[in-house]
Length: 475
Length: 130
Image (cartoon, rainbow over all chains, first blue to last red):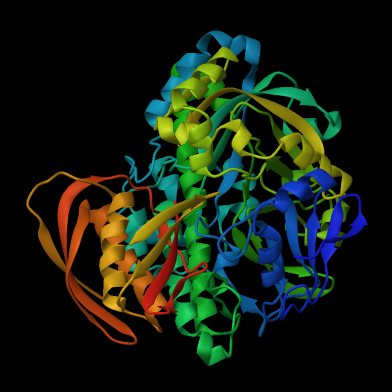
């Protein structure tokens, strides 16, 4: 792989021709040190492969937390122009609408300190976590259809969620065009008993305090102040979303010959946006995205229950949703005067003030963006900058980015030792699996401070506040 | 022969075998390593039938069925009993045991999927999302 050409301190380019068939350049947002780490896996080759997709426009982009994925790298962004530009399910990922939701409690960390362990324990008790875990919320056929079509709105009949929550969720918690019929029976079977569950891997529910405010005005608009207690929820569409992606990759791989597609990686399986295969996938993707928003809504409801049980009903009733953003989704947006399907895989929207499709509450500021670090490190709340619309299809990164295999992490530290270290740092830990805990050790991830610094210097998003963990429930 | 390799967020299965059928046989035994422990109880047999555009996709589809049986029925594969294989279809019987699924494997990907002849042997690579 040739050396990327430096455009500026935070942007590098691999030109057309770096790999055969590239239609646009590949660009990487990173500083020199992050780029050095990124070179350690196949991310650069993968983003060049993404640049070969039919209908891709401007450039295929890699965010500063990029790491090797399946086909598309995680932290990869590409926009394709319909009707002939392709839709690639791998450009969204298996965990459709994996994302994060931030809740803000009306208490300060000092006020809640005595009850922190009880709160984390209660969250762990109420929110099922771990691979394959189902939950108490089991949906029959018609109710599942309603969730797939309407997302969290469909749970209002069970007393879950509020209008305010929906108003503070990306896309109001519902993508248009969702079709329950586009979700296979196998996907429905996997998902029908998983609503309200965290899952495993890097999914978590973290209790935090606002450690520092960088932009007081925007923080106030987001409802955040120093020392305030917050809860960050990271989860997605569980087995249902995985199956929707699996089904679509198989179908598009099988149809590749019909569309004359010869791809450098079969996981880039794709079909023209106007094709039946792409239309079916988009309808299923929207349904899975709605399911994921409903999942985070159900988890948030249980978190509120835990807050009520440990900190009191008043605190639970005063707990507000700051925002909920998706990491893995494709959206039809207008950029550079043309409508394009923006594929974000491990990347989030970062729309600034005045941009279209902003919730009413954030029209004057831009919407909140969340970049979680690893367990034990800080997470950041940011706000989109105009530079994101100019340079990255209104996108920024979604986290610190993995830099070590799960085995590598487990070799370096035992789950029990990591738990002791975190607890010694004052962080309450509840984990479904010691093995899973070790795999998510802080050193397995890139330095979130450096990632956020690049995001800000690149003009994509600006820091608003930093959050420090007080307790974590690990999936 | 099979080998597992772990990377950043995935595991890779590499198989070398004498025949194409042996690749399926080896893959069936190998996936059990990841799916969970069998409890040693009496086995059951299940018929698996998959279609795909080529051998590599057939192997991915075959393994996907085994992941599904583990996830939904708690059955861990023990061995391949029989297999009919043509260009675009695989039909066979697998013996499985009740077990304790780890729910580690979330998907069988098409990423760097490969199945082909290498001299007098057959090689295959399948990557799993975990």
